[in-house]
Length: 299
Length: 317
Image 1 (tube, one colour):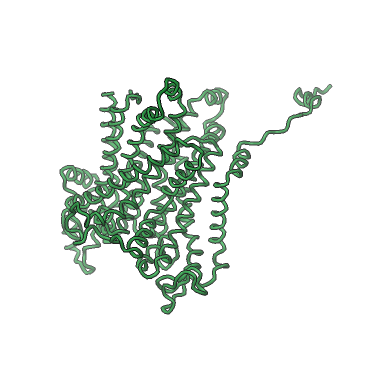
Image 2 (cartoon, each protein chain N blue to C red):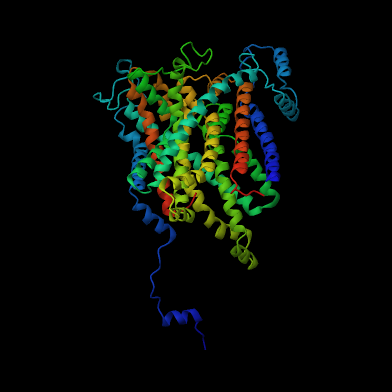
């Protein structure tokens, strides 16, 4: 005679009457949707990203076409809604296309630092002992530099260029993320449930995947989103100094730099690229604040 | 506490050595020959060799590193490749200017930051809090180099109240504390003060809100202490942390002044760095960064020590 498995038998007698509760992330999403500031920021960011992505198709003019006769036209000139720059190029088109590089250069270093930094931090926290000391003391040295100084020192030594700027910024953000990953991992490693998992035969890889990542990724993710704002300002700042994107490529920081000569002739045209950096950076900050309170992560 | 202090000072030593190592490596991660800036394109191999020996680039890395550190400890940071002048002399001249700017900016930022923070923390979730919190978000999100440009546009190009660039009517010969000179300091200092203002406002708001929700505050009120008396206790409780944040901010501003100094042509370390980067003057770059980074490490150490000494609540074994 065949026996029915016990659980299946119980389930057939008592079909589950409860409704599955929403997951953690669904709760976070539900809370953030109700936060008007965070939602406004999210909509602005989506719009900026959309414009940047579709720029080549929606630009009103060629952003590289120079003209000596239409140099430094004011905002609102017919055919040049946002005026023209010091070489007579249409500013609106340049701002649209420039969003691509600016957003790319602001977000990429944080993404790379997120992957590398959490990897390093989890390794240090989980391994403990000598490996932890060796990794964390190295991280402390990088942490001993003010971030702006480190970014400029590295990209100054490496020389101008997009790849060099991205590399420098990634190195600036790695220690900050690795520190958080390390401290959370160390806490989790010492907890009873990890001991229990180990006692029941779970491998190191399984423990990291099931217990460490679940606890570590939330706080690091929130922290990383707040870094994007800093990264946008720094990346554009490097281009502003002449250490990032090279002309004639449009990028907001570089445009701000080349338009500096025009602050006496067309001041508000000259200030426009910076306004875009500001709007992007403040939107990322507000979204990150919203995310933090939605996830109830204390800093 | 004494043993903590000793350990804290000892702990700073390897960090400083690490910082020095990183600064040393800057020259060697740089692509190309560090001497390329001064060598004429048709330089003979002999001349190249001579210069390599003069600057010590022909020796092994560890040898170069330790002799560089040894000389740096004795105040010799080598000489600038572009001008031939001693790097130490150039850096110390510039550090004074940067320090003046950063210190003033920190003070302005601290004053307004704690004002907004207190108001926001006291009247949590009211409209005052929302405005104060918004100002602090603006402070941390605004690209300060752009803010500097906007201020120049408003106060120099439009209103013509303040000079746009430089550090004095006679170029940057010598600094004097009179109105003619201070006029040049106002805009860069105000621009710079936005960064610490935002951060201090956030910190103070969180501190005040936390302190006001503690039981001892209810206790004080229950014993009949007036609003002002309670306020005094709140200030006393959040002062150490707020001061520590202020100290760290000063360090960040000293190291991060390059963008603002570029906008205002302020003759400080940022200006020097800019020059070093674009003339590929690696000894100057290395020396300036070393001094700024060591300053930052020492300031962190000092803040930590002062906090331990003055805040009896912090127990550090």
